[in-house]
Image (cartoon, rainbow, N blue to C red; front, side, top):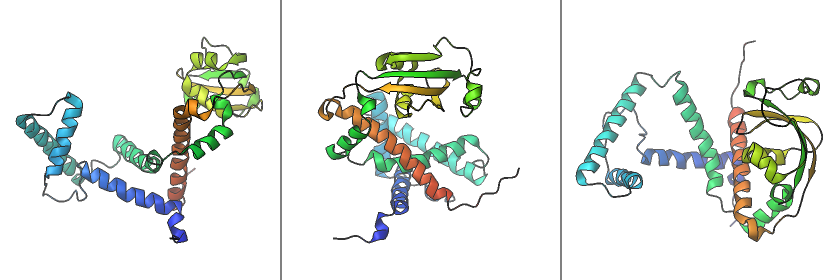
Amino acid sequence: MILPGWTREPLVHFLVAGAALFGLFAWQGEPADTASRTITITREDRARLAIEWERTMQRPPTDAELDDQVEHFLREEILYREALRLGLDRDDAVVRKRMANKMDFLAASMVESAPADDAVLRQWLARHRARFARDSSYSFDQRYFAQRGAANCASAERMERAGDAISLPASFENAPRNEVEARLGSAFMANLDRLAPDGKWAGPVQSGFGWHCVRLRQREAGQTPPLAAIRSEVEADWRSETEAQRRKQAYSLLRSAYKVKIAR
């Protein structure tokens, strides 16, 4: 069966996933109609509350404990609806952030459920062998900044004098991968693998300490294990980067629908 071309558009997939996510949130107890003063607790709601209790307490709830959970849910639901009626969700940074996170979750959820077959992972491994090589070495310079906003990595001249004090070398020469990861963390290592060894300042790159401007001068890739030996590692890397790309694509689709005016 040949599907129409419009069914392959990313925006269609995004909207379909949105409908599914809306249904998920409704099932979790977030009402579709917050103006209604009728609240129905279904058997499915009670079952969900019982499951949540059991996951937390490692045992099923008693009847009294389940009744308490229902009352807690009702209290939260009533206060939530009344807060919306009063407009307390407007201009609230916490609510704003949570809604934005849900939209990001919507975009990423398409990847979370996507199967990662061996053909996809073999292709990913072939494109990113340096990330998985076991004896890679790196030569790079770094400048540390406690605050991301201060890490302006665009000016090469500025980098020679920039940065905050930290007990890390300003330069690493042929440093083994495990040494770099041990000193700067796995998040820094993953981002370092994504940089081109072109001798240009890039970043900011996050580590467990804060933020860094990085100039990768050389990367020597070692031997890469076969996919069978590192499948879970490759899949995690593929899924993480693909999720980030889906979020970016989803935002670009939404952003294109808005006309934005910024006062200067």
